[in-house]
Amino acid sequence: QVQLVESGGGLVQAGGSLRLSCAASGSIFSINYMGWYRQAPGKQRELVATITSGGSTNYADSVKGRFTIFRDNAKNTVYLQMNSLKPEDTDVYSCVIDQTEGRLRNRYWGRGTQVTVSS
View 1 (cartoon, rainbow, N blue to C red):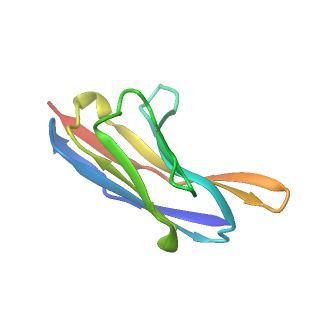
View 2: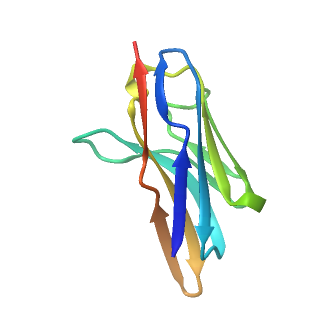
């Protein structure tokens, strides 16, 4: 099993910044990617950003140029630096880790952290 502990959410004014972090522990094997998704009540979960073990990144169009994902491989921790936040960025942000375990490929999710951006 893999445990993900997220931190860094909160309330911020539009135009402000927040940094989310997610530390993975437990049975860490071959990580394919780590990343962040977000979900508002009544809406589907959507990708925010991912980063592979090799450092390749992928961002949702809505956050490109404002958010940056980076990771500390030694600590199995992924970060999401969010700048120029907008009210529409208000969501619950969840961390994800996708790893290969032998012949299996599993994905684990954190509990989520609330980000609220006031106008």
